[in-house]
Length: 562
Image (cartoon, rainbow, N blue to C red; front, top):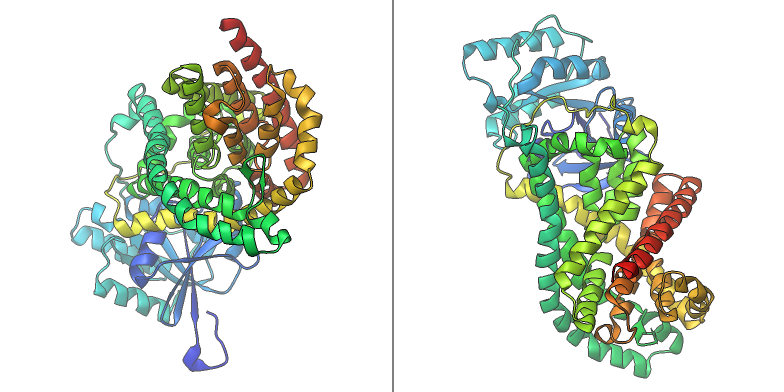
């Protein structure tokens, strides 16, 4: 318990700990009726959610996976070295195992135990008596609740237990609840149908984002551009030249300034991130995500990933930054492949709309079917990403002994609006607070480099190199710019694809090379902060090498097939 000098202002800090998916976040949100604020915990790199209610501050720590080497598990365990009051959250359906795993971590500390999912237990005196025996043996209160529907009585019981917390006295208990409750297997657990459904459910967010967010952006972009047009005109006519370079500078009909690219970020990228976050939030809040993880694990393990990692890779289609940060919850052996997959194969909310726009323009210019070009591109991106992971992931990550650590089959439930928003808001905050500042810095840097002629110089230097890919020299600039910001791919769609006359194969090659050769600087900087700059440079060099090889195969193989 943390005290400050004035007793009237004393704040009690409650550390909320428990395994993954036991309902910690739902519990604290229901207790406080407040939304969370995210901070790093005690100077560490792990992000925790803080909920303040009156004189109590709840710190929702990441879920603990016992016998796991994940970064979030290690940091959550380190957090238990403090003297804060502990609210241990365990799941009623797996009560004996949860208490056996978690009590050794909190023994000697003061606090209480909340038993979630109590609505899944057969009501009656026998269940209540079993809970009382466990509480007496543990030396602390055990409070059974349904975290989604907390009554005033339950709030009072939890508040009373935390106001005068007892000490966790036992490492292990002699008393037992004697039950283990799991939902019956469904279609997701079917040996053949399950993986097929899991893949379909995993692809749906990408498809919904492509069509939904892009449709919204098509409507909003002209409106926002119309609002900004008079502002841009004023800046160009009256503001100092050094500010115009940063805000509205245009080079070869492509604007690098904040006012040029800012609307693109908000109108195209933000809806993509929002839709992706909401869909994945619904998956997680409903329990569906865990079933997808289990079904996918056998398919992706040969490529160095676990089923849990695939969802993080899919998050990258919304924004690479929160996707890379979320890999803190990956195991030590699979975190590297997961980050590599995000950097290589996750077409983020900049890259995806730009790619679709270029392929659509190319289809018009070459009288080709745009849907076929898009499907071919996404298919080639998937296949080459898997080949890349197969050759670069470690043997330990690909081992058949690398099992997915899922303690029990989760119950499915309809997500509430509050739980849906809670799951999605974290991703959106990371986009706005972490990706956006880096975007602004890179936008300014790109504007200055373009104004000084550095980008043109790099393009001229690389012009002979793009000829190896059967591309015209003008394609060098989009490739260079896309290595800084993925929206640079849009250059290939100038004048509806007529500015750079390309065949369908050349367009696919140019888009692939620009998108995959290197991750954008925002992603690269995030990877550097999350891992180390030495390993990041190794990743960049390795990715560039494989991307070059795959682009050459696409360029010359596609030309041979024409």
